[in-house]
Image 1 (cartoon, helix red, strand yellow):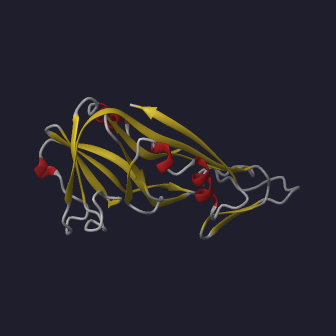
Image 2 (cartoon, rainbow, N blue to C red):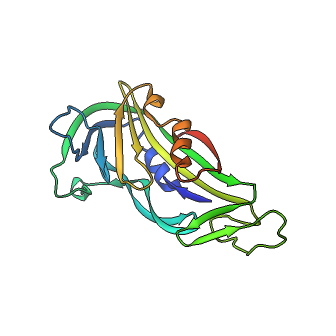
Image 3 (cartoon, rainbow, N blue to C red):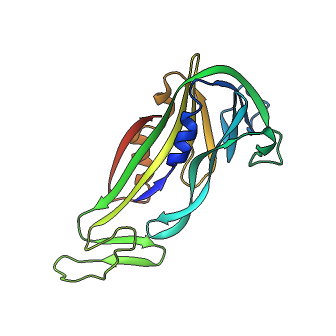
Length: 226
């Protein structure tokens, strides 16, 4: 099982924000001159909460991806006590501070458990140069338990993925959603009906179906109230 997202320590730090004032959001936005509020940030952004700062990031981390080591973007957070510790990932660009002035009432993590598997015998490409083949009637196949969960003709890959962080305030709700697995973009939305802004379960299935035709894809979504 591959897990991509907030650790228990990070979840505790997020919980500590409840009841405090979200003063502002600071980030570098490609379209900063065109919008009154950012639609995305690259790499990271900072929440100014009372007298401290919380970094919200989405950066690459090496992990198992279908039997290979790949860089997959991972949501994370880190508490900063001083503004001088806040360094934007796109440090060559000018960050802008967006005033919020709202009390944080609740924090939610949208977590997906994604399972891909195939019970039928056949051919599956595990990496660029490896194939596992088992024709019907064969009695033995190579032992490849360590290759992404492929074993005895049963192919499976499981990943737990934190899709979004939702911060519900008294007057508005702020959504910070990861981009795809291979981009460090953070999508930013403002909507009290926050679930319409986040990729649906069907959207997630569609994303994982590309390049994995013939596999069954299951997605279990959990809304974790911190």
